[in-house]
Length: 352
Ligand code: SAH
Image (tube, rainbow, N blue to C red; front, side, top):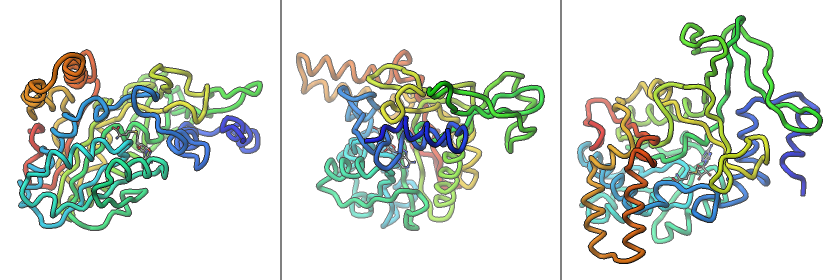
């Protein structure tokens, strides 16, 4: 079988260097050779672990926050309970379990998952087997109804472009070939790139943009403006774009992003300022650290309650999982959360 690296090299030989967004899209979602289309990389045996895989408490807290928001908006009798890029389906399973006693919530919820990879769709179908689940590949294909949505480590997987400022303008970072190896190189400067201000970036500074994130956020915000609802987005990143954050992870280790196309996870930090700007149709909360959000939602009381039923190794693992999710030296401060909600409605709990 052709390796993805050969396919990319051939394309570059014939048509010239590609930008990082094109490279990421090929590596992550090529129909037969892409990272997300050929494997299940999440978990201790895979390449990386995500919050819902660390503890059920993550999904429980978010599920109850979403249910409260649904009640705050008058408990609409039909709504979309939606997740973007649900991975192994654990987050949605925990959200559903935590909300089963919220009166009317399950009856009103239609579960819609936005997932590009058929392989992941099959895994999600399995982990959510007791429930009726619908899939779309893109948020624009969701039906029109109040939308209550979560996205954890979704936006970091979307393709970014990098621009480096020089005296004359912006040089895009490209992927080309040198002696048969994939290498980074700069394109000729272009004087202006829409939405990027030269005055804010020093010569030599790098700015990352993610058009896909902006368009998806725009769609979600328009849907919320039109039909009501809220979206909770959690990811690693910051307010604004701060230099080069393009990275590859394989086997829980950082690796060369050009080293093994299709075999490593490729991500970039999420620019929450750009998300908020794209979501102008709805109201945005402040950005809050994941640890702070989970504490406000009551994760520590929940952890104590679960701990009473555990002992030995299971109890140790449980305590370590709580720490991993909330402690600033672990995921607590690196990961941030933001909520978008219908105008003139309260933000989800934990976000005010
Ligand atoms: N949210 C999960 C998984 C994160 S991995 C968790 O927290 O464990 C990223 C997920 O997004 C995978 O399910 C991947 O297949 C999906 N994905 C990546 N790019 C996508 C795109 N452009 N559209 C829809 N889904 C995408």
